[in-house]
Length: 81
Image (cartoon, rainbow, N blue to C red; front, side, top):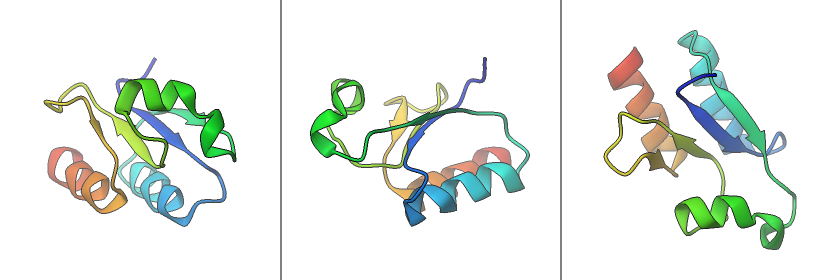
C-alpha cells in the first residue's frame, strides 16, 4: 500500500494534472475515483470537509491532505522532485 492517496475523477483536468505529475515523478499512489455527484462523496467530505477533487493525502503533511491541484503539484515537486 502506498503512502500517497489521490481522490480524483478520471474526467477532471485538475485531477489529470496531478496524476501526470505523480507519474512523471515515478511515485506510487493509491487512487480513489469519486462519484460524479458531489452529494455522493461522503467519504471525501468526512475526511476533508469538502467534496471537490483532486485531493492528495500525504502523511508528511501537517494536515495530512492538500486539495488544490497547484498546491499538490508544488508539494510533489518540492518533496519528491
